[in-house]
Image 1 (spheres, rainbow, N blue to C red):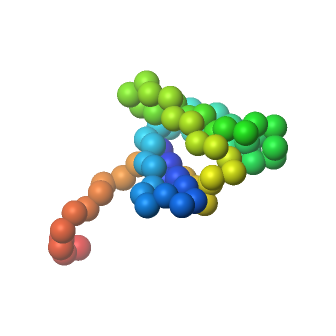
Image 2 (cartoon, rainbow, N blue to C red):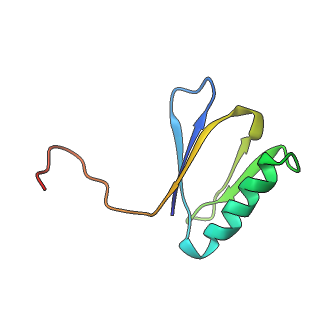
Length: 76
């Protein structure tokens, strides 16, 4: 699963790729953070890194399946 995170006053987005079997855990961590139980959203990516984002700096989150990323002018 790909998670795209927008950060306020940030010029770029964070892209975190997680395993599909922990997607439910990531969604639960997000809901706990947004409900006020946590002040930082922590996610573990596929390569074992831990990514933390302060909740008050979140602009948006986009959760979606991992897919092919097309670059250039490919015709369908």
